[in-house]
Length: 181
Image 1 (cartoon, rainbow, N blue to C red):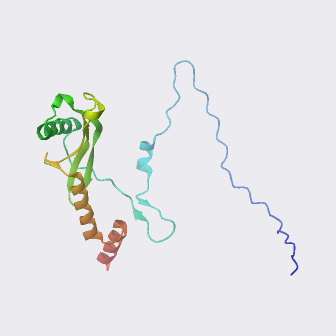
Image 2: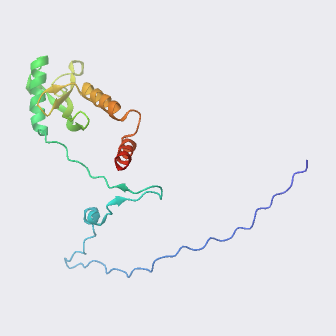
Image 3: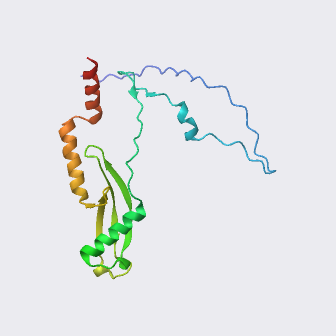
């Protein structure tokens, strides 16, 4: 078999993209105490967003996602007080020896309609390393200490019961199509 030399086809130059006309230069900020006009922020453009998010030409546009606010729950400071009291009562460590290791975070589980605030408490500032104790504690909106893992497991079970193996967005799309027919 004889190897043939392959000559590439001559490349044709790509057309130059159309460029917008150049902007007129802005005057430089004055040094006489006059600040330049502020640039628009993202928040100022939110009203200009379209009501739907365009997709890549496949199917209808998806509705814009509107975040739902979390249900009201107690403050971080209230969580700290409740957590310190609970740990002190259950483990015998005095409240004055406890401190927050990781600031509390609010989690909402929509399928089970449970809202918790969880964080980490330790006694590291008052004791040596070999006496260090760390507690992860979650308190629900009813101000009761709950097992965070059990709450997550219940939410996962609720998700599986409602959606099965489907993605929630696909499930909602199928449900919406079913209502139209």
